[in-house]
Image 1 (tube, protein in one colour):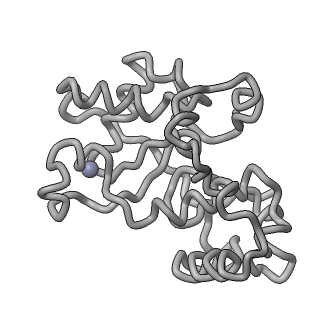
Image 2 (image 1 turned 90 degrees about the horizontal axis):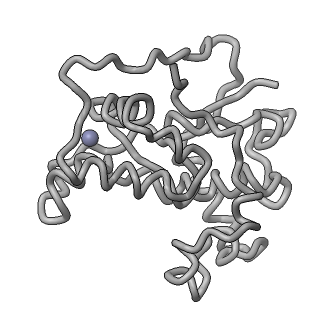
Image 3 (image 1 turned 90 degrees about the vertical axis):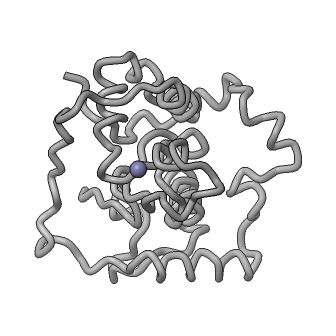
Length: 197
Ligand SMILES: [Zn+2]
């Protein structure tokens, strides 16, 4: 089953999970829960700045940040990166114990702490080799704009429980950090992480 990225590089979806045989995005309620959660999360992430840029420049100078192009980690525990800062994540993941948090909602926080402490990849640290799918071998994917519109349409149509999907429940603040056993069971270990050499 072909895997595809949508919107941001990093998270990969089984084509059959999210697209119909006609290569249209499926209605959200026909997409399995786990990819649906990531898809919905993606829509809220695509216009966000790179986390490392943001830590560098802050909200006051958010215009200096590069827009994120890459996402690693789990929904709501993810890391957003621009290509310039991707080596920092790879270095942390491979050499600084970051891989320990693969599959955990702590993934993002731990990396942010590492960056905030002044760490970065050594100059010239290799970037990941991206195996870009053969564009000719893939169906034409709807662009992010299209997906966003469709997700929002579904939201407006109230066909799904928005609050549940986006995790914006009332007690979000309280549950964000508390990783219950149930949530651990739900973590998708198939999410792609940089390979740990
Ligand atoms: Zn950046």
